Image 1 (cartoon, rainbow, N blue to C red):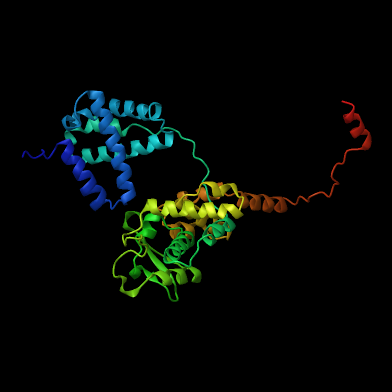
Image 2: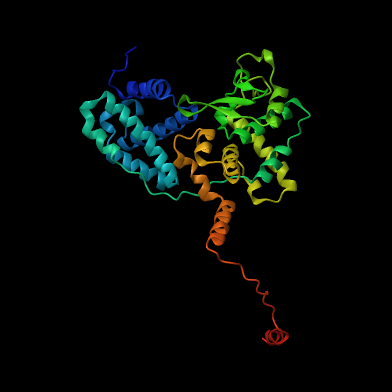
Length: 336
């Protein structure tokens, strides 16, 4: 069996995922899957564009022109948004930077790819639940069964800590301190640890499903005893959202994702007056600019700012009576 050359596309792709992303960068499984999907689509398009099998693709085939036509393809043929296009491009650029580190002979070729810029995209407002809506979803869980107790503890943990789903599913008994001071150790992006305090209610819910003899297995298990998955969390959340929507007519309770609980935690902290730099550390954001997005999306905080400005400006609300139509006016309108 012939081995791939050390400078082949296959070898450098393997070292990108197994060496750089996993070992050096410590990328999350979610990031690795996103980069995998982006490069898979690119290689499939490139093979079709070059009219040769994927196995015959070479480093010389990764040209800026090919990347640009690929980006046009996923927008026009696959109906990808500008945001998705930019995410695909980010994965390709990260891969090309890896190629450049190991293949300087094609530096000019790779430089042209790296010079491709992002496309301006519409950044939609962050979706979140108000505290009463989040409480309604959590209250919809029937905690009389073991599965219900697990789901109740999971939703409380996600909302209490603002944890990413992958962070919550990775929690093990050793990461929990369920007596005062109650807290959980979360492992975030880039292998960064952070400690988040727990509400007494969250600690009590976790205590009901956590056993001392569980060893190093994740706290949240599926029915067969395997770790709960992201898809499993999305499924159970949809179930409880449907139950909550029966008694709560809020339009936000139509499409709720697990990540919305993270957004909801951040907005609730902002509404409570917590400093934005504290929220950054609480959520494990790398930059405070990421956290600041929650300020722009919350109408209640904007109303509070407007009220504060109104008072500061020294303007007083007038007590003018509401306009009422006269009888003559109504009589005139009836003649039309």
